Length: 111
Image 1 (tube, one colour):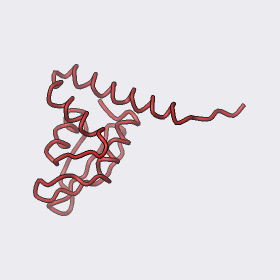
Image 2 (cartoon, helix red, strand yellow):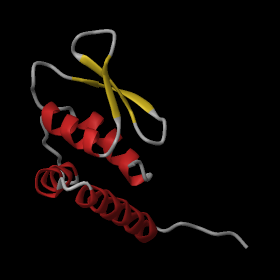
Image 3 (cartoon, one colour):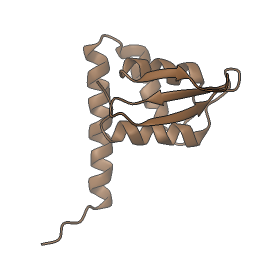
């Protein structure tokens, strides 16, 4: 018997991941600011500054460190996946980086 995942299943999985992230933030007492940031991350299209992303990822227990270039940061999720985010003097984070972060949260990355 072959099992197939429907679009509805994927959407529900994303909802559960966001709910888990919100619950984690509430347990840590960081509800107000982090919950708003998380909601903005899941808007379409997302529009976020690097400082917002940095605050959210730290609340979720991710590691952020400066990469080889001063404008690049290496992000490590709680699942151990690493990727780079470019930050140009506090400007908005590009959507490609925000999609990577959303995908990782949907996979269940959180402490």
